[in-house]
Length: 379
Image 1 (tube, rainbow, N blue to C red):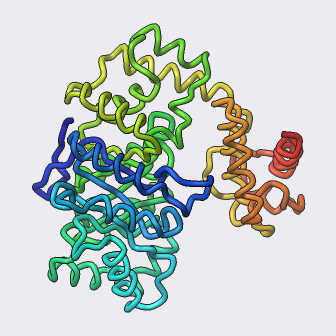
Image 2 (cartoon, rainbow, N blue to C red):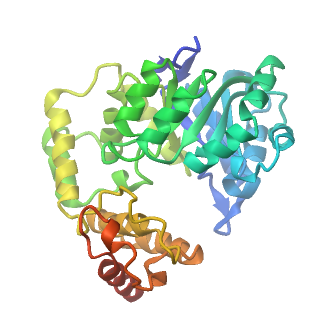
């Protein structure tokens, strides 16, 4: 298991990190973790070199932290860097930072966390957290020895990411979404390189794009097989990320012991040597093949937002394009149901036309949303 410098912190973390967001569950209920299996998986990973364990306040409806805490009993706590995240959307006053933090320590049954993140930052949350003096809380916890390193996870545009990095000198690390399909999405590759240039450790989430890069259509897989028949699709995605020296940790949300074993085996083969030129070219070709299936040429600039009816216009377009790219109907249906529940789906478009003049791509947005609504209704 390879290890890397965690930014400027002086510690080394395993390149593979265990993300405790998709632990095995009972009765298909995300809140009912199969504790025996989950604890065995976590300890197996640690016994085989994984030393970064990531959880968060809302994972598994609040039970992920509890089970992670149980898994880290019997000496395992001292073997890992434990990361969890502040539920910033619940913070209404400065005192809430400590209230939730100490609740998390109780769940985890520990007196400290190694890595503490402000969870899922975007522009609006960032401004609110500054007003609520989040930095004072983070620094107080570091001085008290309750938190070793502070960071943030991110979901917004690169320009917002850069501002967050620049507006607080106390960051030790950040967590961003990145994979070979999402190089320009949110923080993207620019964000990876910028954060690293500032000495931050960079933790990667969604390395498999929600599992899509592990289930490639045949037309894409055939490209990889011509170059490295022995590498599964998962390994290509991990190796592409590992080829960027700025990456400190690649998180994998593992649900079965088989996945844990497979990932450990893959990461045991990954060295510091980046992909060869022909291997990078194969990844580029696969990306082009997948992108050729895109139906809606939306750049996700967000100029069409906010929608008066609450529709997540770029989100609906992204969902539809990815359904076509990855031939993943079931996955798209699940996400669309969530959009429906949140009243953000194409179904809520009233064809008011407010978005039409705002779109730089001159997309016929109401017509495209109606197409999505109609097709999803048929599936």
